[in-house]
Length: 178
Image (cartoon, rainbow, N blue to C red; front, side, top):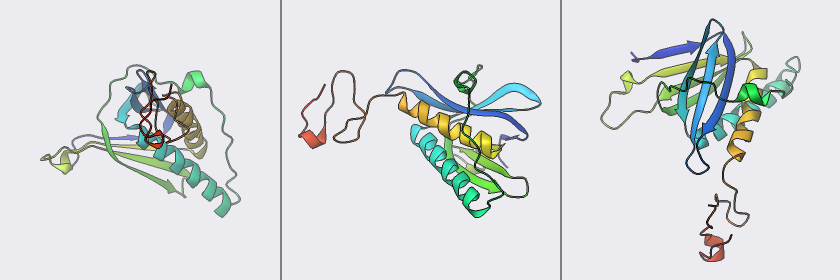
């Protein structure tokens, strides 16, 4: 049995954000239940947020193709409401994440499992389950792209992030480019 299991259903709001300077940011996934004004927050990695955003968008697009009665929700959000809200008190750091869809309720679900350190009992890891509507999922996916792109600029040669003081580019034989 997990030491901590939280289910956000019904969900009022879901968002993701990053705090810190580019290159040293910490990424968060945050949601609220309709009955509880206190947000539930977990730490995630940038690549997890990228994969979640892509997965949600692909899933929603595919659902709209397979089931024409499920129109593609518009991507509309208020940037001020999408920023992370205090208190930023993460429950745990995310390890495995799963994305799914429940057709009976027309809800996406995101399951976040706490990272399991070597030697720890995986049965003691925390689990966060977030149930969201397709419009909420698309909002999160679109906002995640904004959050990810606020970081360091990407080198056009190698695709790696560039530092302010220069970039060691393997495609340029290691020459720094400013």
